[in-house]
Length: 170
Image (cartoon, rainbow, N blue to C red; front, side, top):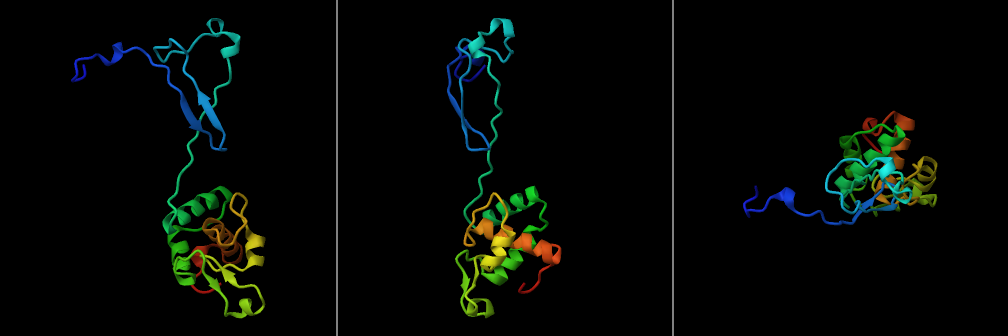
């Protein structure tokens, strides 16, 4: 019995509305059955036809912080879904060398820049490489941190086996 002297199980059931967000971004409204006081399943004969609908399992999306750690972790999740190898340490090491963690970094002085295609973003990817190695599900923007990391890692995997094998400018 709780400290306030009320029995938790004797409370009347409240009608509660819960909003769950599915992984696709679709909102699902779940209304518990009126009068339901236990977790037992209703039998089809006792359930009105209008109330018999398919149950949708709600999934929760992982929320990443909007910082270098979050961008790397989100990229690693995207990479895992697409079979792109790489580790947190390999990505972080290359980001620190290429841009010091600045997602808006741009190189306007090297040979690529002289040809009009400067290196951009956290891993200093040029537009043709970004376009060729862009990973579906990420933004089509080389300045987007997750898109930049994921495309660069996809390129490094194709060229060097993994971003973990890159220890200098690539």
